[in-house]
Every structure is written in structure tokens, then in C-alpha cells.
Image (cartoon, rainbow, N blue to C red):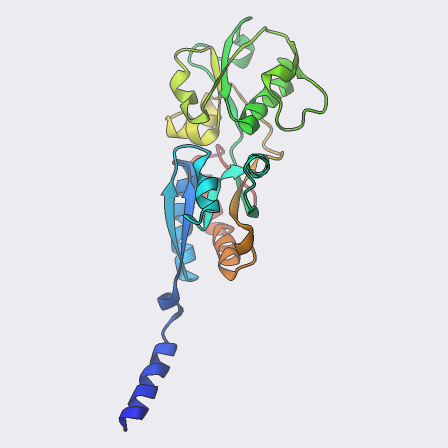
Length: 261
């Protein structure tokens, strides 16, 4: 065989290499705990479909969208739609929802009281200081009968929107990630599930009460608007929305985290 033919044969053999050799690397931002754990379960499924997931953990809710917008990530998986909408409005991000993932019903926790009804008059309550999760906490307390909020406040009420406070609760606004750390200092704290589980709390057994799991707070996979229709996004979503991942969530979190598919 001539050298020319040998060269052609080599090129053809390279073209015939398996898809694994053309793997798409996808860096996904996530908060520690359930979001990152679930992505670890997605990894081997995505790998079989030609996607190598690299999980980048962030300890707060602010940086992952900035990192996605700036190109340091291809996707993130840590937030619900109202939070993303607020971030887009405030910062002008061109970021879109690729798919819904799981729901983490936010809950009220306490080290001082064993029942929600036992919260005393004048109880000190810590709530997240970001607009969407702080509003979510207030909406939960309204749903449970302790507050009344102004009509039409939507998903982002603040303590200034409280029109009735049946137990004269005293609110402290803190970073959501710090909520478990202040339980010794307050009567109760409204804590996001991922931070509760990270702190060793069991949302099913330890929460005094939790929000209705049906609502706008299902979490999402977010990508840049320019990438939304790219094939790897569809493959990533398909890898996440599998029976294997659903089983992992159900067996690992035992009701603390609920799947959307």
C-alpha cells in the first residue's frame, strides 16, 4: 500500500473513533449537598452519552449565575425560577431555564421548641436575606397563619409588606447559608433544604413545618441563552431525567427532596 493510501486509511480510522473520544465537557455550578450529590449520580449516565460533567461547588447563591454568565460554567443547578428571574432583572443576565430538576420544600427549624404552634409571642425568627428566599419564608409563615402580607406582593415580599403579625415575631435577615448556624441564638429559623441537610438536619423529621411542595419553587438547570438549543443541553437534561436518578433521589433523601419528573 502506498504512503498516500496509508495516510488516507489513518484518517478514516480516526474518523471512525467512538463518540467517547469527542466528549463534551460541561462545567456545572452547584451548591454543596443535594444539588451536588444528585449531579454525581447524573455523571455516569451523561458520560455514556458523551458528556463529561465537572461539578464546581459554590457556597452561596450569588456567584453561580455570575460564573455562568461570564463563561466560567456551561450550566448551573442550584436555584428555582423566581430566584433566577430576580437575578436576571437585577443584573441583566442572559440565562434561561433548560429544565426543572427537584424541589426542596423550605422549612422552619428550632432547637428551642418542639412544635410550630409552640413558638411564643415575640419569638425571634431568622429568615434568608435575599429577596426570593426571604419572600418565600414570609409566604410560608403567612400560609401557616402567623402573618398577613399586603395583597399583590407576588413572590418577593419583604418584612415591610407585613400587615398583621399575630405573634409579634421579631425577624433577623441573614445569608441563607448561615441559617443553621444561628439556631442556638433564635427561637426558629427558616432554612433552605440544601443548607439544612448539609448541617445534619433531617427536613422530614426535624422541620417544625414545611411549605407545600407544589408551587413555583421547583429547582432548575440553567444555561446561557445562546446555548439553550445546543445538543449537549438536551443530552444533559435527558441524563438528569432518568429513572436511575429519580431512584437515587428517593432513596438518598427519603422525602426531603422531591423530583419534578
